[in-house]
Amino acid sequence: MLFDVDDPPDDPPAGCQHRLLWRLARTLWDAHGRDAGGFCVITVCRRDNHLSPCPAAQLAIEGMRTACGQSVETSPPWIAITRARIAAGEIDPVDAMAESLWHHHQRRVVK
Image 1: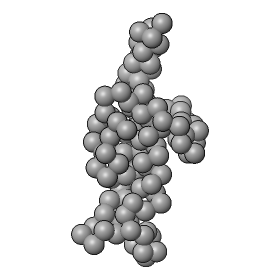
Image 2: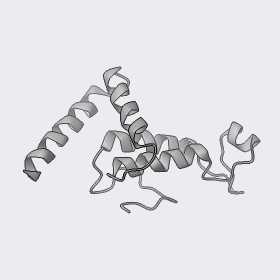
Image 3: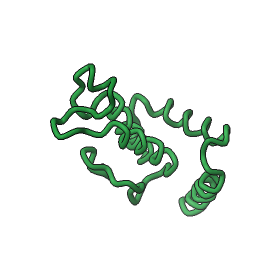
Image 4: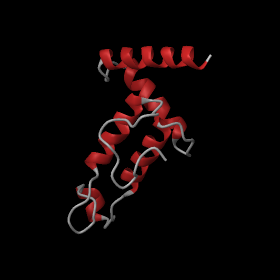
């Protein structure tokens, strides 16, 4: 594991293969943080008495794992969401270009 699932770093860890995907999943993780009692801070999750990590935070963990190259059940949807957000212009084009260049460089290094 490249990161602590109970306290993932803000920035993608070394070895993370999809930095933009990490940022999307990490944003979801932040939104579904825990309060002092261990419950999710989001009203809907709180109403349903979801202890943290709630289902959305668990999904975020799977997204971060996907970003780090692990295959989990939700990996295909996470990758599709990231690509769709880039295509729709919802992700900063500079970040998208940096990610593209980084992947291009990684493929050249592996060869």
